[in-house]
Length: 619
Image (cartoon, rainbow, N blue to C red; front, side, top):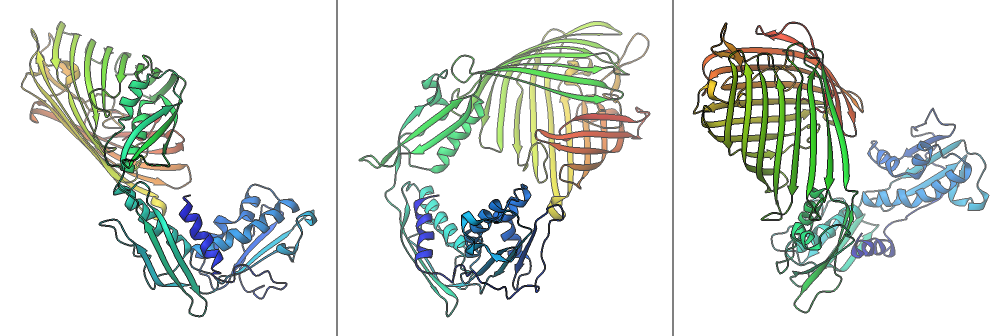
């Protein structure tokens, strides 16, 4: 807490705002107010607040050391006496925050006032604790003055004449006013004077706070310490410290985020220099703690018809000393599937942060895939180089150039596809919590122009996705979630399009209750019948009602719909299917554990119940 906030508290006490604490030998409120007894504890704890609607009592319970002691099963006489003596000041401070400066606080241990018990005379056993409080009148501001304020800043509606004059409001207003000056470039702004006087006859507070903005400040030099494996030149580049620019505290927070995104550091500490330079420049010190270089992880999903999927990764942080990150991912899916063979994937990716700009990461990626689908096999190799740019916490963009070669084996024999592609993607993520969103939205758009070689066609693949989340009820217990995806491939024919560019529907990622990739099209002639492939266009709709009925437990009801078209632009032959079901969610530190059961509702691709087990919400 800054020195000026401490000074405000000292000033409030020194100026005698209120009667503070009165320990009385008798309790005038005894028997008039209800208590709160913990039936699981041998010690009863009652809070009795005069004239309260329950709000003040809840606030006091949340701050009470006695409540904490009983919750932690610290119930010896010495523990409860220490907690009771500490509660006088804590309860008084909580009442000050709410504008009550004439409180009477009475804490009795088995009928004896705690303030009258010497610390060394603590009882061996306490059976009853009664906390009786008369908050007294609520004080209001007779004057609420603060200044000079930064250009464009205004006092809050709470800090005005006639409003409740809590110390919390005064502290918050002072902090906000100083922060406004800092955001305006005055790094050393502070509270210069204060005059806070309480009038107990009129139950009012006269509050005057004077600010000292100090000079406009520019950033000086960045001094870094704590690194061992990291190249200091690269560390400066990643931090992106704006030497010579006007001070803005947001720039320091941005620097902290850039360092955290690398994954190299377990802790970062940023400190502003106490003294300014002759030119009003301010140096900044950055201390970092590097993490261990290696990390591993794993995931899984399970379906009764699609089989099991297991994945794992190994990561090496700061592999070249410049914050680079090497990650190797492996995945095996469709193990035990009723409709297809086992799919395998191996991916190598090297990221280099702060390439071109501090917010741009360059990467190179190589991916090997072995896919054994219902009516064809495909072996793919993809090599790419790209850049990911972070515009803000919510908006990111990615662009790459990649070469892909694949060999597809089906009823017509072997077909080779070779393409040079320019995939581009933008994501706007406004969800409150990515792993278990309750409010906000998520938008993504992918556009991939590609140039085919030999028998492979050329064209463009586009895919858009929108998700929305809205919660209602007490503590947001009910959440409505929806997702829509549309995609199409244009400029080429279906038989000349790489199979992994086409669209399927069915399975946990599209339509639950329908088998994985069960909905496609049959447009390519084969020796006996047309070969099933993905379509050139698709649309998928998902809706969920999530109900959180326990601290960690919830249920979900959902309905999904998918449609696939044989031609680009959502034309040609088409088919659709749908599914619905319910699921259970159990919250874990790394996201909800998901178990869904679903069945087909429409279409002719599914038969029977589908089971899904995984980590994280479906979307």
